[in-house]
Image 1 (spheres, rainbow, N blue to C red):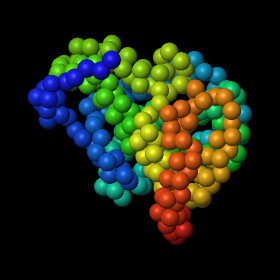
Image 2: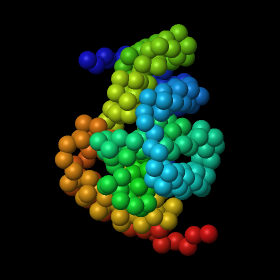
Image 3: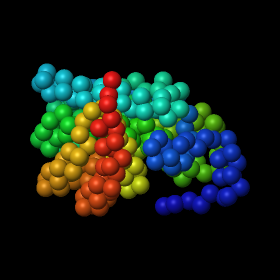
Image 4: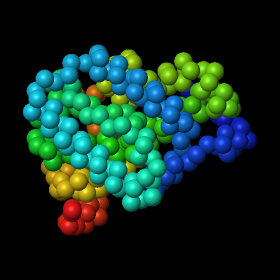
Length: 270
Ligand SMILES: [Zn+2]
């Protein structure tokens, strides 16, 4: 059920909040939640998820996830610095964990860079480059502030005209439950509610650039999505396939963005 927010109240609310610019795509997205608040919620929830999950004991696979994750994260930070958004880097405390769950073909990153990869996705990523497609996409969601955007939409819908500061200080439980709804972690561990198609395309685009800048061949995104398209079942828990641009459409978009990504891939790296 949606609720209409009187324009004047919305205007007042928007007056005191920030619109953040999404790196690479330069879209303006609504960020109502102070980063400090979002980080607190994120870290609490991340620790809960890790606590409830079985972490992989395969040292080689864990090392792979952390190695690729660290390269993508470094790539993201370099990118943010070059884009004049270096002051946001302090908001990320990257962590990449591998959860032992063969049936779950999934990965996600919470705000602040807390990431989980499920072992069920490894047969599709195959190698470091495949994993870089996944983690590039996920880190893309993180640096685009999609978590804040979803929380903000939820806040507007739930609190309407109430001043945000009041909502956050007087309704901590509702704020937390919004985070849980956004991340679905409280009810069904590790299952994210779908992002919008726009956010998915944005994460694909940013991910492609991040992986290329990290030295992974962005052309490998195409065979990765082809492998993913062939899988059956799992759609419900699949961050990548649930809402999404149909695979065909997604691949067409990626093909259009490849020349831009390849410029970075082919550029000399220090
Ligand atoms: Zn996504």
